[in-house]
Length: 339
Image (tube, rainbow, N blue to C red; front, side, top):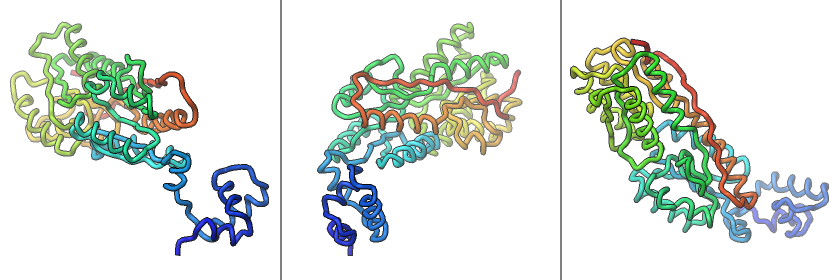
């Protein structure tokens, strides 16, 4: 039989109000508090958090939306986020918005209907951000974006500097004397992809490379394991052509795995015949053969910082949006070399 609040009060010899005060961290005599805490532990009493939330107007739940939880980049973010939120008594509800625009709006509405205390969105939609969706939501519920548009000032944002990350990648490849560089991105409506695309195109033009050296490959879904096979399929004819690139930049390491498979099928050596660099720095970059040179976006820190910002928003009324942008770093491994 489930232990009730009344049972705890009877066993401890105190009033129900006193037990409630202890549970809600209200002032009581220390001896009384210790007695009630001990009784709760002995009787294995579990308070009804839903009922408590109705009384307080809170749910102690945070809605989190990512593109696809199968991508190790997102799972790494979610892991540190969940640990930090749980430490302060919050649970995270995670959802994948695979069809970004439609799924994202549907999930947001479901979260709002269920009464979450806040929303965290990872790698957000360019279209929805430009339409002001997240800024409008933040007027009624705390919203934290991970990797949004750094030029906007109407949303709470935690991100790695995507522009700088792409600059570092291009500078590194140029320093290795690579000119014919292919860029692989997603078709999805994504702020992060769009930023990388703009920097790649800008730097190739500035370097004076002819149009045939500027190659962009787009795939539909970058976050599902099927992206590996899709990239292999798309890259094979490019690697088997006279215009074979000397280097490929992949927007994440799932895409990088596809490049490795394509090169292996054609008996091309990475890095002797083809250099490869990716974004993220998840375990995929370490277990791949060869190990992948990568731009470290530090997903564990992204998750922890987003959780910290959300907790601050929940605890205090912030008059203006907060922004935290930190720098990426290049991690050189086996998949790249100079020409």
